[in-house]
Length: 162
Image (cartoon, rainbow, N blue to C red):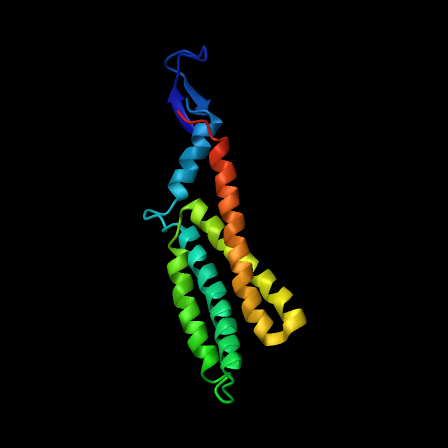
């Protein structure tokens, strides 16, 4: 607590008053917070986490697609030794590029396509096996893209034109 001479509180000018400074409790709390902040702020964490998320998702999708292509082509060897690392790296690189996207409408498109392709892969694999999984992935991605386009159309119609 700081000592100061104050005439506001009714104390004589010569008598010291012990108590809070003129700043209220909110200003004091803000001053403490700003004193505890690091001098160089850290870069925002959200873009790095978004890129890591898309890299993981892209790596998993790349492995799945590469293994599906490998089975479709009927190659007997290299399913794990070649298809997994190549699909993972290519998918992670594609995911890193997708992680740079910050437009909310484009992010909605990506989510719709990924969700549609995942649902289509499951729906296609059940009745038709490996071949149905590849076809279902493509069909599901197309349906996801069409759902996004319908959403975008409905949102654009609701906005009044200035």
